[in-house]
Image 1 (cartoon, one colour):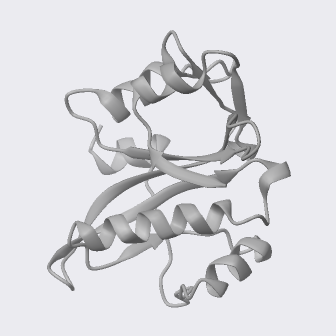
Image 2 (image 1 turned 180 degrees about the vertical axis):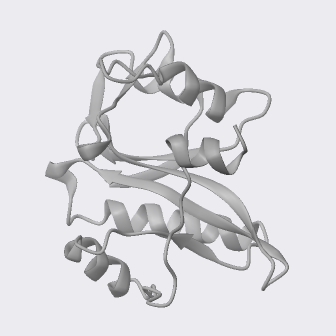
Length: 178
């Protein structure tokens, strides 16, 4: 049984009384810890981002949302978090409507190919429709053929005409005139 719901600190307190679950998010080098005492915390030695995530998810100027996928053991009722998605809203001048942007989708290895990713996408697509969004976008790395196949299997179109442009680090500082 799969359940998907929006992440709130109270959910973590309820769901994690008896265990701590960590998600190692592949190349990103950070860990999500779902713990009763303080919600999401980042314990990566290379990035101290836990407080940043908490502020961005729950602070007065929160800009991202998170949904969790839970695996429910029908025999025992025990629940285990097996995936998450981070998302935010953008705006399309073409559509003159806002859109939902999926920033990150992750399902733990042993739960892949069992419908969790599809359930998360379905949940967020419904959220986009419920909130009047004109579209639901995300990016995928061009070498990640399994993900591309998964997304295309859902009906998503991989747009060949668009490229991601990014300013960061020194280039961002130069563009800002600093």
